[in-house]
Length: 261
Image 1: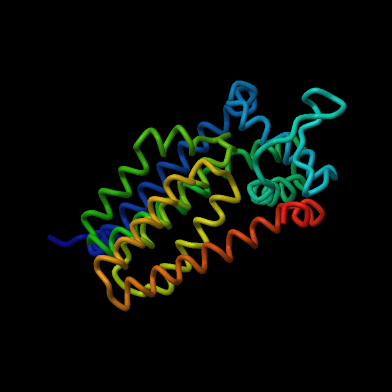
Image 2 (image 1 turned 120 degrees about the vertical axis):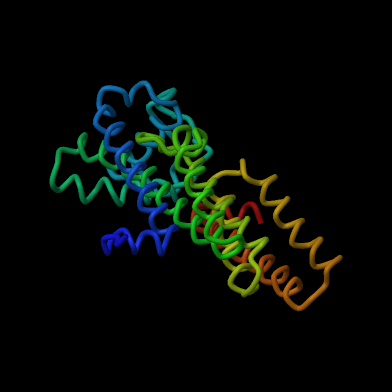
């Protein structure tokens, strides 16, 4: 029995087929949810609404270091605990679309695309990372778990989910693979350390997870000493320290940073 060339290609590369199918499902679901977002956005979580307001105010001219929301308790406003880094990604979608559509429509498109893009990167990282360590069958299974598990598919990746938790989940994936990556300790340590530093800059909720990941790297270097484990530990610590400082400097005013030192 002969198969069409496209089917043979998919059978020869099952992970690619799984990724294409999962991404197609994610994008279709995003399109359906995004079509209803205009009438339902006000019913989303407070963090999602506040994030869009922060992006809107930043585009309108609010200072990068000023993360207060002045619509709450005017005129002094309420300082928010998150950074501008997530605002950059959302604004990078809002601004181009605002040249084509009205601003309200551009914001809704960005609110649909932003969590969808994070989910697609999530799927790619899980798929190729799992295949590298556990093989193709496990990678296909992992991809479908991420695509259909409610926590990843709905709770933090649905259209309109603009809080920073989906980004933190993605950085945790990179940290996990850095801990268990079987080769290239320098690259793994750099990726894991920078991902951890960025996650801390976005929000401190992931701190216990990062401590656990760093502790796992440290324990392996102590009890299973090798050039690989020692290099991974040193590179991770260096990348985490440098990344944390740089991300902190990028979101902290100089006068406040000098005062804290």
